Length: 123
Image (cartoon, rainbow, N blue to C red; front, side, top):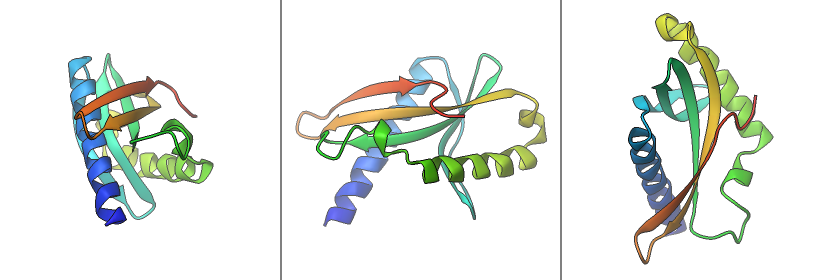
């Protein structure tokens, strides 16, 4: 049951993050880009810049904030996955890029979510 709940919260977080980005002028290029080395939740473009987004959703701060859940190991995997994406998409690889974290606190009872958008969260 816990796995299903985590998957539901993660899916909801990604939906909220996608809507948030679109409402703030981002064009979503793809979601859940996967490679052998890892996954990037959302890849978007805004103001001529490519934005790789890691989405972390939580229902409480009991295990820390959503942003704190982006470990050094996860950051490494994201960087490796970005290399693959840029090699496969040479036209987009010419753009400057950054790595953002969208930290989502979800209230399942009230069906609300609060988004913290951390730009340039890690290098």
